[in-house]
Length: 444
Image (cartoon, rainbow, N blue to C red; front, side, top):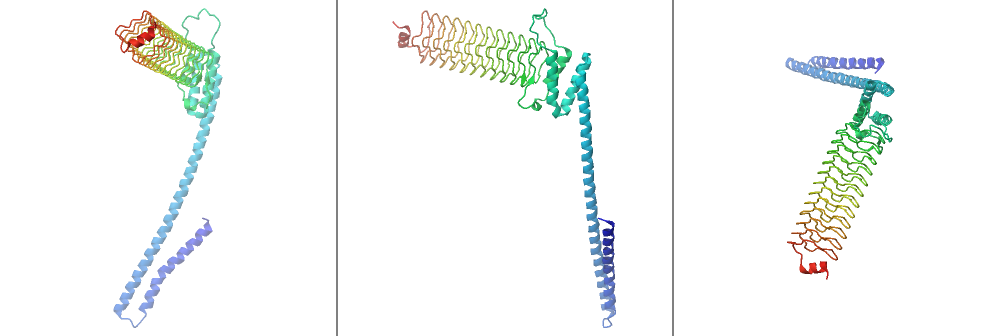
C-alpha cells in the first residue's frame, strides 16, 4: 500500500471517529433542551445517550482492532513468504556449492587413480565412493569408472606363467575397488545395463556378502575367491574360472554359468534356481543342500559332486555326467535326467517322483529306498544297481536293463515292464509283483 493511500485511509478513520464521538453529544443536547421533559426523563435520556455513545465507541474499537489485526496477519504472511523464498535461495546456493565441490572432488579423484602410489589410488577410490553416495546422478558413472579401473589393472593372463598354480592375491587398490562395487546401491544402476568386469583376474578376492547383481563377468578368473553370501543374481559368468572358490550360501538366481569351471567349488546351501549351467564343470563340487530347482545343467560335469539334500526339482540334467555323484535324499521330483550318466552314483532315499530317466545309465548305482513313483526309465541301464526297498509304483521300465539288479523288497505295483531285461535280478520280497508280470518280463 502506498503512502498516499495510507494517509487517505487514516483521514477516513479520523472522520468516522469524529462522527462516532460527536453523535452521542448531539443526541444528548437535543433531548436535554426539550423543556417538556421532566428532570427524571432528562436523566434517563442522558443515560441512554451515554450508553449509546459507549456502544458506538466499543463497536468502533472492535472494528479498528479487527482492521489492524488483519494488517498484522498480512504482514506476518508476507514476511513468511519472504523467509521461505530466502530459504529456497539459500538451499539452491548450498546445493550448487555442494555439486561444485563434488565435481571438484570427482575430477581430482579420477586424476589420482593414475597415481603411482597405491595408497593415493586407494584413497581416490574411497573418494569416488563418497561422491556416488552423495549424488545419485553420479553413482552409475562412478561404478563404470571403477569397473574400468579393475579391467585395466587386473587383466586375465592367458599365457602359461610360473606362478599360475600358486595362490595369487589381488592388488590392494583393485580389492578396494571391488569392495566398493560390492556395496553399491544397485537400484541406481543404469536401466538394463550391466557393469563390465569381463576377463578380469580376481583370484583369491574377498567378496564376502558383496552385491554383484547384474554384472558382466564373462571370462573372469575368480578361482579361490571368497564369495560367501554374495548376491550374483542374473549376473553373466559364462566361461568363468571359479576353481575352488567359496560360494557358500551364495545367490546365483537366474545367473548364466555356461561352460564355467566350478571344479571343487563350495556351493553348500547356494541358491541356484533357474540358473544356466549348461556344460559347466562341477566335478568334485560341494552342493549339499543347494537349491537348483529349474536349473539348466545340460551336459554339465557333476562327477563325484556332493548333492546330498539338494533340491533339483524340474532341473534339466539331460546328458549330464553324474558318475559317482552323491545324491542321497536329494529332491529330483520331475527332473529331466534323460541320457544322464549316473554310474556308481548314490541315490539313497532320493525322491525321483515322475523323473525322466529314459536311456539314463544307472549301472552299479545305489538307490536304497529311493522313490521312483511314476518315473520313466525307458531303455535305462540299471545293471547291477542296488535298488533295495525302492518304490517303483506305476513306473515305466520298458526295455530297461535290470540284469543283476537288487530289487529286494521293492514296490513294483502297476509297473510297466514290457521287454525289460531281468537276467540275474534279485526279486526276493518284491511287493506287488504278480506272476503274470514276471511272465511278461521274462518271456519264454
